[in-house]
Image 1 (cartoon, one colour):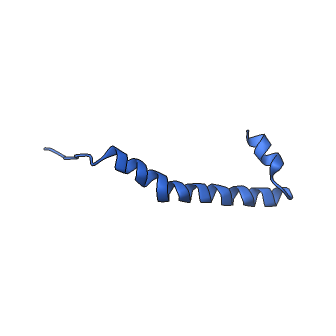
Image 2 (cartoon, rainbow, N blue to C red):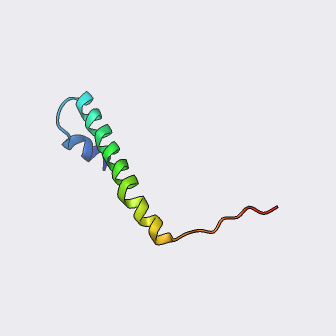
Amino acid sequence: MYGALWRILPGPVWLRIVILVVLFAVLLWGLVTWVFPWVDSLLGPQEGTVGP
């Protein structure tokens, strides 16, 4: 799968690396912005107490 992604990216090696880093950053931003809060709302509040 990664080989196929590498082959379809345009440009020289340095440009491919830059494109992959940007895609990875956008993916992480999307997960933190929309997916993780949505999953957290499905799980509900969790009671956490620390006892003696």
